[in-house]
Image (cartoon, rainbow, N blue to C red; front, side, top):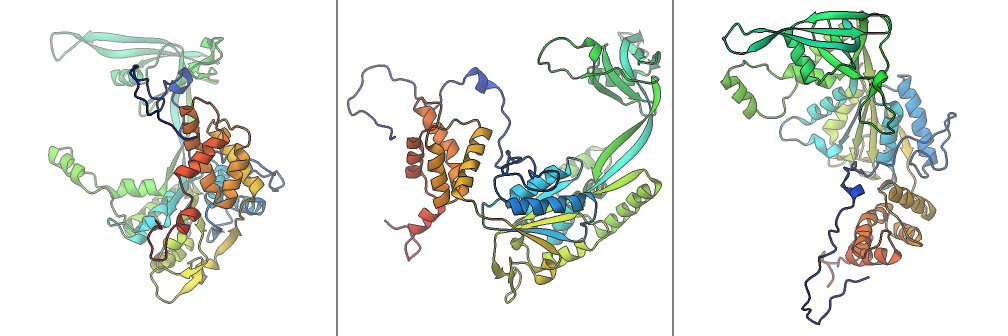
Length: 474
């Protein structure tokens, strides 16, 4: 459907262009960003480890998903350190989606650190330092700490004022009386005025469930007591039950950090509080290279915490996409990182066949990876998509992005994906929806896809238009 213009001049008032229609009430609400892999939720496996037909956002790739399921079990049992998983396949066959699905299967508490092979080429730090930072960010530390706290529902919040001793004008808060209630009993606390400032900062009211750390005076709002819950279907407030036990209790708190966080905190020099120190920290370069000596010191402290039973190391996952972009120095360093005692799980991905290893002039290796590193890898191959599978993926992406497809659109896009690539077929969805909106329709029709093909080229068509001299044919 080509937009037509009339040759006859019009004397009427020009109408508003439909390119930006007035937003509806529903569209005014802030919508979450839709990423290329927003539809991937997990690997889509049965409890026995077999791939479902179309599960958790995946279509096809049954063998690869089942193989990744075995790797997930190995990672959870901590028996995969010292080796790597290599995902190989043509572009657009779901290698990154498999890596993201593995991260979903492992859970949010397991660190997942994705990167691209070309990230190591930085002008600020060495190539090996970039790899080392990624590995350290992928090793988590779960620190358990038992603290004395006062926890309960706020029944009273009364600040007591006194004359300001520094001046004769105004009053200041001398202390605050806080009443806390649990299932077992109640308690009234007389607290320092600095804690009252923390209470105001947390916007705590009577009826909120809070806890106050006895040693530090830190105040944390847990939520609103469920005794104040109303009968509304939707509410912005979070309601929690009344705490059990005494008001004054010992509570176990768990904090999650990574070794990369500890390295960065210790590598950053702590300047003074004067204006020159503050200005110096502002003009300083963004990245600080962490020395190996500092990492060994951090490892000693972490090991002492682990020996005392205070902390637990949680090995995560490093995902390096386009791994063929690394050079021979990086591959050699990668071997040493895999052999370390604190090594995370490593997932590599590439779409290359036999190719030259970067940094060399005569070493041709499968996937551009030296054979000594390939020996450490479990290799999983991703397959191409059939026309029916392309149709299912297109329909899945349309549902994820909230698009309505007219009759025959899925078949047309499946044909485009089979002729060019799955990515090209999916990329046509949003531009076609804009064209449909300009025409006053709420669904995409086949004619919109046809016009998209006139406006945009796929990779194969673009390559066919290039002449022998390297220029586009007229």
